[in-house]
Length: 207
Ligand code: PRP
Ligand code: URA
Image (cartoon, rainbow, N blue to C red; front, side, top):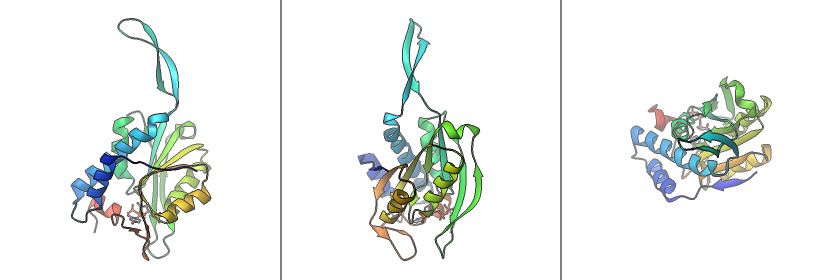
C-alpha cells in the first residue's frame, strides 16, 4: 500500500478553514467539496490513458482519453460532501453508495446501505470519506467492494489518524491511500486529534 499526503498549499489552506471550530455548515461544506476536487486533480494525474482517433475541424488526429471508467463511492454520510468536487473534474464518473455508521461505544462499523453501478468491477473505484479514524469504516467498505469483484480500489480521505492508516495497511495492502493530512492520534472517544470534529454533523447541520 502506498500512502500519499497531498502537499498542496491550497489544500492546506482550505483544510485549516474546516478545522476551525467557528466555520459554519455552508463554508464547511464548500471547503470539503473544494479540497476533494483539488485532491482528485492530483490523484488522477497518472491515470492510464488510451489512444483514440478523432477528427478536429481541421483533420484526423490521434489523441488520448481516460482508459478506465471511474466510480466514486462515498461512505455515507460524510463521504457525500466530497462527491460533487470530484464529479466536477470527472463528469463521466458514476457514483455508488455505502452506508456505514460507527457504533459510538464499540466504534465498530455497522452497514445499512449499499448500491453500486453494474460497471463497478472494471472501473477505478475511489472510496471517499473525509475521516479515517480507527479505519474500521474504510476497511469494511473496501472489503464490501472486493467481495463484489472490484480490483482497482483507491481510498481518498481528508484527515487520517495513524491508527486508521495502519489498519488499512494490514487489511488492504493493495489499496493506495490518499490523504490531505495525517494527524497526531485518536482521543479516547475515537475522534481524530486535532482533527475537525464530527464531519457528518458539521456538513449536514445535525447536532
Ligand atoms: C465517520 C466518518 C467515517 C467514520 C470514520 O462517520 O465519516 O465514516 O466515522 O471512523 P472510523 O475510521 O473509526 O471507522 P460516522 O460513523 O460518524 O457516520 P456519519 O458519517 O453518518 O456521521
Ligand atoms: N468521525 C468523525 O467525523 N470525526 C472523527 O474525528 C472521527 C470519526
